[in-house]
Image 1 (cartoon, helix red, strand yellow):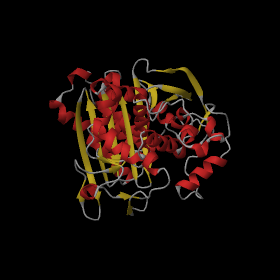
Image 2 (cartoon, helix red, strand yellow; image 1 turned 45 degrees about the horizontal axis):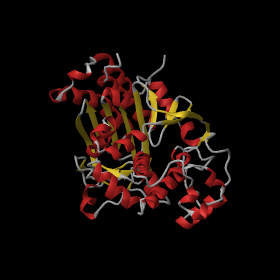
Image 3 (cartoon, one colour; image 1 turned 45 degrees about the vertical axis):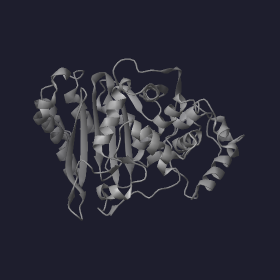
Image 4 (cartoon, one colour; image 1 turned 90 degrees about the vertical axis):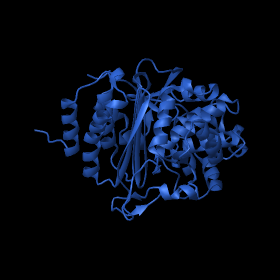
Length: 391
């Protein structure tokens, strides 16, 4: 007999005992039931992994609710609140991708361009054979997961790129990589005649209405910046590396993040260029096992089983090279599709998922890095109870 972890058993019990309401029945007055659904998944999760604090935001049919749990600082006993900022880790990549598609919509770059067009020092290098699309989908040919230890500054990063030797031709394999999408973000800043952080903070975030999201947290907001905790419960925050800004540098509130999710669920509410930019990140370019890789977001047909979703976010897809099948032409979502992205820094863990056709989405932000399967199990259980597609 298989014994399930405590928090998995509690989620299973909730799924059995909860009725699945039709989407149209969810409204503001369902807050008590929604609170029960979220609490049932999140409280055991926090207890099992000793999470100091979490903010969980849910959107259903255009209405969002934020649930706050625990502490933003154990030392100061500061509770998580509406203004608490969490490190997003690699969820930041979805913003990097959106800024790139936005720059393309403005005519400032093309994803078919090559790095050497914007960085002459890379012209003629092996990396210059890859396109900006390859950089954004981790298919340049084998760039590493992290910036190499010997690279301490941008000039050294450029030197590394110049001498880099690929493992495969562009588009043949996917290697999840911070330097890959980091370079896309850096080039996007150049194309917009700015640096990446300034372009994101002054152009994209304001247009999306995200007033509590920052690459560089201002002094006035530092009081709201949560402390993250490592496995020994020592507090700290991210220490930036080369391309940290572009690959994992955003900090945001759960309320801002659920607004971003809502913008992705209904891009038509945005002005034309931003609408097309958001829609551009929903296009699938490569099939990698059971997952379709787009720019920033990873996608799956919905409904999806828990086992399939966990497999699509498995360590082997993060750490290993995987064969990539190019979708020709690129694939717009057909039918109900779940988009998701995980994110981690050394002391924070995040997960975001949404299904535009069902008008449901979830944001989970925690000030401790905990296992990705545990995040997905909790999110999957919550979404299943909000979705008319799951019975």
